[in-house]
View 1 (tube, rainbow, N blue to C red):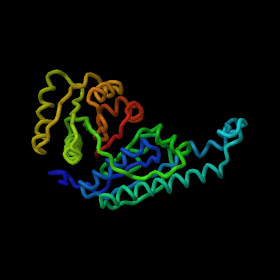
View 2: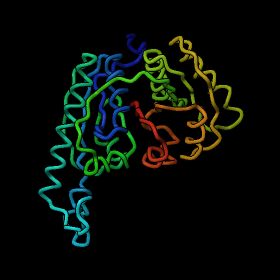
View 3: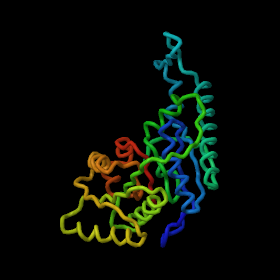
Amino acid sequence: MTPLNEQPPVKRITVTLDVSESGRAPLETAVRLAAITGAELEGVFVEDINLMRLPGLPFLREVRPWSISGEQISTQRMQRELRTLARRAEQMLEHAARELGVPWSFQVWRGHAAAATLANAFGAEILSLGRVSSLVSSRVFATTRPVAYQARETDTAISVLFSDSEQGGRALATACSLARDMAARLTVMLPAVEPQDVQALKEKAIVVLRRHEQEARLVQMTGSDAQSLVRVAGAAGMRLLVTEAEHPLLQLAGLDQCLEALFCPVLLVR
């Protein structure tokens, strides 16, 4: 595996852990990236404080499959469920990290599970996020069977949101390293800019691609909203999105909205 060239070293990669099936892909990608960069992997299990408040709502009832009558959600049972899920998340992280010899750590973090909140809460150079709705729902409604890590070799398509900034170049360099390591197809998504600026932006992206000896398809976006991102992502068959944390599209459309619209992990590069 080749480290990122001519880029500041990546010391820590943080991944939010989701023990449902949809949580496997973000973890697998984060582990591989940690192996490439030599970074420590930090797994975070998020205890959403909104879930912790549910037992206090008198009108809310839990209906179990074997019973037609509802009962009030127990605070004690909610806490037990969360502790059980946190243990499974830690086990999943340990199995994945050991597979590639990656140093790792684990923590439970309590707060709002909104993507923007999570992005601001952790100071790692790279943050891996899955869909927020999946992240939250898995806390209580995840299956009870243990989740074991297993790498999957499938056709992988990586897309990267590029911009004319130092962080934009760093995001593209990260995407190049992942694409090479995973033998993945790479699509560079250029933001909607004025016509006279299109060629200059393409040339800057090509410079980074040539430096990393990486082939890629360049696609010009036509809008700066979440739906524009989804349209391009669908056309590219995207399985992973890499972007700088402060990309203009994320600022305009909103990180939470973009994550909810996509069905793939997102790597935020700082």
